[in-house]
Image 1 (cartoon, one colour):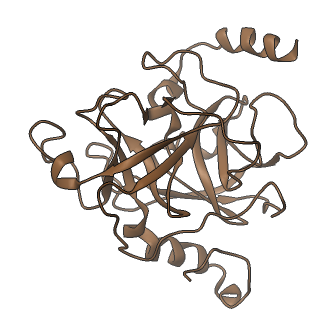
Image 2: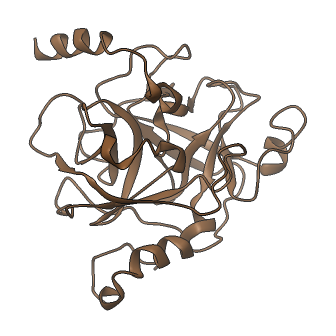
Image 3: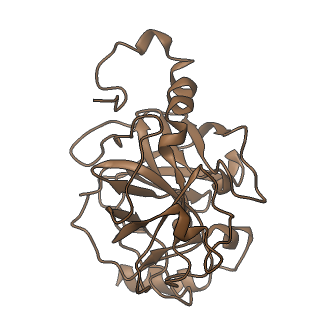
Length: 270
């Protein structure tokens, strides 16, 4: 009954500025509850999910720069699985500051990455953990299968978004193929990676923005942009996290220099 009421209320939410960052996981499946422990739901001040992110430090969330709708309009939820249903695993925090990458370009989507400092640290437990990150400039071979997760819509037409977290497995697409005249025609920069099925039908789009693309257990990408959803000619485009690993560390630890040698505060390189 509670689920039905939530669905009905959700349909009444009017379209607004959040539409530009809403999107979908298409062709995926539902993972077991709280198995993706580092994922974060970024919600409006009214509780509407509009972007994803991942916890990289107990006081910092990594997401896409285009998810910035203003600090006062955002709430971050760790440990969530079913939106709109309190499960006792959720932890809430408002942003203390937003740090988009200084080279972020809204027109080209280059350097589409942002760190969010939390006003209250997240407690790490059996439901919430930190996201391991790749080394600086670590690459991925085409064909490597990765997984992207989010609460975006499950249909190509952008229908009603699911309440339960979903995930989909996708192979990495070479930059040369993604940049070809049959695809993105040179618009893929060195700060981006592509992932998508050769046959289409599996993808992430805008509304899953900022969500993690995980390869070999590490967050190599953040959902950034694309052309349609699930089109085999146009794979999803992700911010290449490994290009910004040094910036991430410097941003976080510039204010926590005394904590650099503390264990468990951040998923350091192995």
